[in-house]
Picture 1 (cartoon, rainbow, N blue to C red):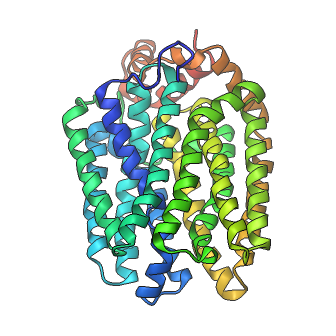
Picture 2 (picture 1 turned 90 degrees about the horizontal axis):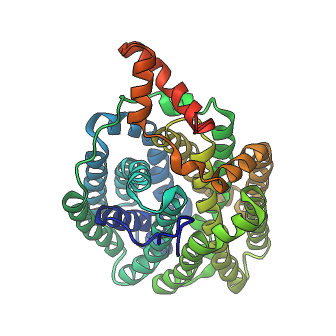
Length: 438
């Protein structure tokens, strides 16, 4: 596959592939526990709602920690931020494997989420900065890594989980250790950003309507997505390996539509219409699962088909967030990640309470309603998305100045006064993104 400039997105510096491999393993952690959820519930004598806390602790901590990733990265540099995140994932995933209780695993998954936040927010910025073939090509490469990780996670979880529920946790620890070694040796020292990011920067960035709209849309979509991911395995009544293959098929569709389907739909219909269609289709799938939860084969088909939606949505929303946000990309990524992972973390927990109070049908129907509300939220940013499509078509994203260049221009304009530079850097960055040729 080639970028608009004619350069294959797979012809990249070795450092990009090192980070991309680490991304694959990191994203394995999302679906890794899916095949072993029933086994954990049975062998550790935990209810499905208790087991759902594996998602909640992991994702809520990831969300909150996202707020501090820019603060950390701007002080120790992107490479050391990546390394710190990978070390935490290795330590806590191994600790989860050694744990003997559901409470212990939930706690260690929280530490895993902290490492995940440091890694995810920084890896996207590093790939965008280092990849050849333009911004759009870098996003597709990142989403390809995400798709492969999501596909491989359940398969690995199923194969190792069939041996023992501890196996998937140890498997991730080993693979992340390999990714850590690759990152240390292949990624050159990355310069620290031109200015230090405030810990409040991601929250302040949400004052921008375009970023807030995309973040709320992602929160509502993730509510439906993680409800499905956390509770669909139970009505399937499959063993760990069978569940692994079901979610492997789902993950393959994620990867295929992230890399090939999303760009084609975007080129033909535009970002907003493509997302409306994908989210609408997902809402229908959730309604079908909710109404026909007792039909195992229908649930399996709907879950696998949802991979189409996830692939399209992941690529187009990530790309749109980076383009419509009038702030630095690492800050935009952290703000967006904070909001969307809050939705992903709370959804399985609330779903568990709904199952305990009513029945297993209710969470899926509520998830479908959340996705529909996501379409409504997205429609309020239609104009900004159309403008972003025009920006990409014109190739404007490829001429965005670096933060160092912007810092130099601001320093010249304000006579090099440090306070003035810190106060105006964000505004100057936003001006360049809106009028790149100025």
